[in-house]
Image (cartoon, rainbow, N blue to C red; front, side, top):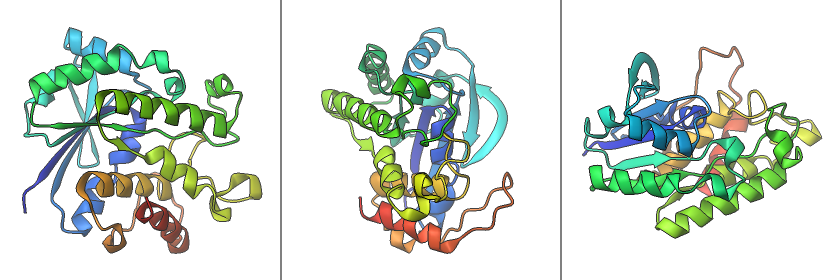
Length: 251
């Protein structure tokens, strides 16, 4: 089976999404090569500035493994036969449509010119937890639903404008939160680990499965990978993982 090459140009939210993507796909016998170009909190505007300046500012993360290598977007665009190139807005700016342009359009045009065979996509990012202490949550009146609705509308506006697919991670995470087990207001577990980044076990797994389904048409019910992370001692609850998988399967 042909290997699918996936490149993310993002930040910590694309790190969350790609951390387990290789392993999730491997468990379903889907060969992939996954690279995430990481700058913490990086917005579209800075991505475009980095392209213009050929900045070697991105930490290179390959198949979920963090390296000490720093690269530019230009270094990587022609390094593999990319099938998919995914980007996103920074979470704190996602609710303001005027932060997307002209940078999204400039990036898309540049990528199409440099890698015409790749499908450009956007990851729809998620809203913060209801009790998040993120410094920018006040911009959304500390209201999770307001952040979700505003960012979702903007991602759809940009995706429709440029006719590019969306990976609906924001929708999946919000649907997971509807389950009592993940409803923080009712004493459930947060799908976030710190109020905005994904939980190491359940959140990152949800994103990886969402990417696998939307990009590769993976049958997530057949995924046998069980997430594990050296950054947490928490024991995996397979009942909670089943809820996450259920929501991905239903999209």
